[in-house]
Image (cartoon, rainbow, N blue to C red; front, side):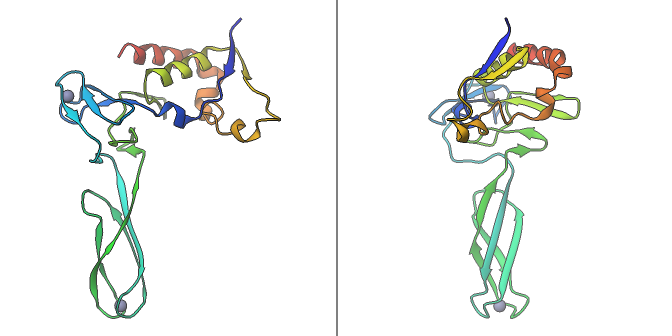
Length: 194
Ligand SMILES: [Zn+2]
Ligand SMILES: [Zn+2]
């Protein structure tokens, strides 16, 4: 019997550690649960702090001189967190603190949440992107896809909040499609050997 029981884990539960491309040599690097990166090839070690991924800096303030509303949004390249603003109403120029939004995708590739480095376990699947944070996440996806029957491992009536927030329940359609199952399993087999 090839049953699948959703363990009820959310995507966040799988994002405790990551397998990524090393920022120095692009080989396989591990980010552990403390957020420390260690490369398996060049022995590069890095503490959290630098964001390699994509990010946006955003400012929305009232001009300090004339109180006109100022807004500006621009791609962010660290480490500065201020944006130079020019008020078109009164001509004042000033730097304001920006709020930074870090994006999960960078140049079409999924990244980890600590450094924004491209995940090691990802590959295009037709027009979609298949990815996993680490080998445990990959294995959870494999056993889900391999299963012919799917059932949730908990009572949907008593657990309504978790119901729609588990990693499995939020998977994109192409992963859930029965027609993609065989090819996805091939792709996962390839990734698990990486
Ligand atoms: Zn390296
Ligand atoms: Zn102004």
